Length: 98
Image 1 (cartoon, rainbow, N blue to C red):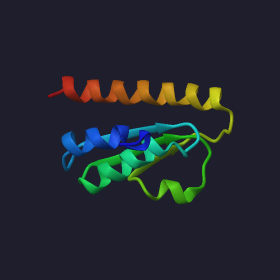
Image 2 (image 1 turned 180 degrees about the vertical axis):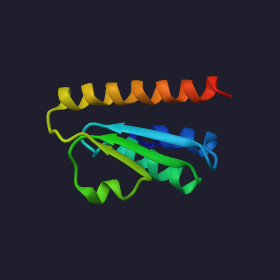
Image 3 (image 1 turned 30 degrees about the vertical axis):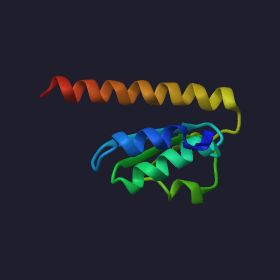
């Protein structure tokens, strides 16, 4: 298998309908991340992508697209870190409320 399949192979074995799969790609062009999101979508998972400033056509291929309005890799990665921390906090709050 090729590098572009590295994450997709795992998702073929483990992803189920209703799972949430988040792909992170600064450029929006990482073939391994894009293939993983495509595979997750085919398996019925909810797909989300964190990326930088990209063509809107890419965002319509996922359920949730969070595009940081920048082309500078360090700024995009810093924003992704803040976003992921916020997601973790929300998940933790929901899980503890159960």
